[in-house]
Image (cartoon, rainbow, N blue to C red; front, side, top):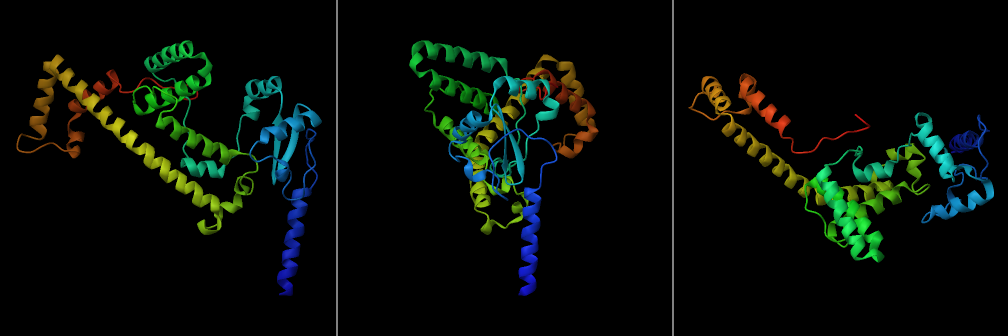
Length: 300
């Protein structure tokens, strides 16, 4: 028992020394924190921006604070933020991994993309009309515009007509859950990664985030499967049209099919490697009539 107490005391002292050692670089001014936890308990968990405004008044436009073992630099000036994050993005644009937010979303990250112009133009026109009709509800109209654009492009849904649409409420729930998971100091595991190894029964955040992930996955999987079926149907439709428009290509494809497979059975996926002409036709149709608009990620 005495040995365990000594080892425990030694470990505690080591951890305290590691967390309270003098910084090796010069840091901006900021509030004095506590050993081990830093400034975590000084943050307003529900409205952290209130704390940030108070620190700006005390310490200026660039503030340093600490959340457990992580140093955080708070930028309270649009000019400074633009200078660091735009002009010197290669140095400052990285983000720490947020364990709970990752768990809620299943580790998915959506790249920026140029969505179909048709959807964007249609939604922009509706937004303009809505604002003209009821300018006092401008925030609600913008809310509807954003959610409807996303849903229309990703899931091929019709435009959402009202900001009270249940789909928008569902999106709001997801955004709220992820925003809550990203709040500074909200979850210890975001700052002490070794806690991720805890089993589910000892980690409430694991159980909650997994439950949310299952609920959101079930909710949106049906919409994904619906648009997936539509995509397949659209491609098949264009293939039929192409064969009608180019009977010579259809004849060559039929000849290849008769030679390789014959007419005694139905072709299978295993036959495709022996049907290069038919494979080329399918690829040409998919290339010529894509079911989704051109997309770019990170400018490429």
